[in-house]
Length: 70
Image (cartoon, rainbow, N blue to C red; front, side, top):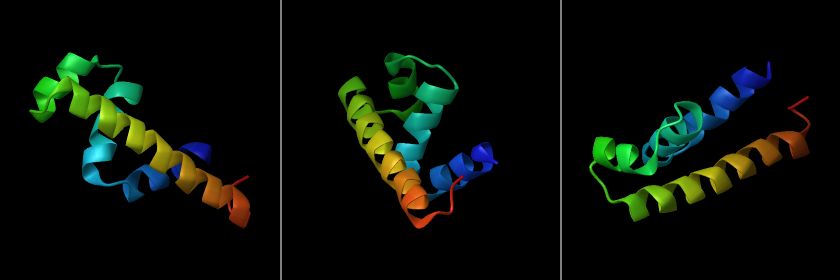
């Protein structure tokens, strides 16, 4: 169930944020690899990843606060 909720939260992220989050945290890629794939600079990857993690945390916290996450 937790995986389903995580996946649903990931789908709510903007595509740019979702891409870096999946490539870094789920696929284990390094920043230069991600930058090359997405055709952006490493600092852009770092910034998007930071923002993606903040957004994801807020989405998951909202579920907890609303009582929809166990």
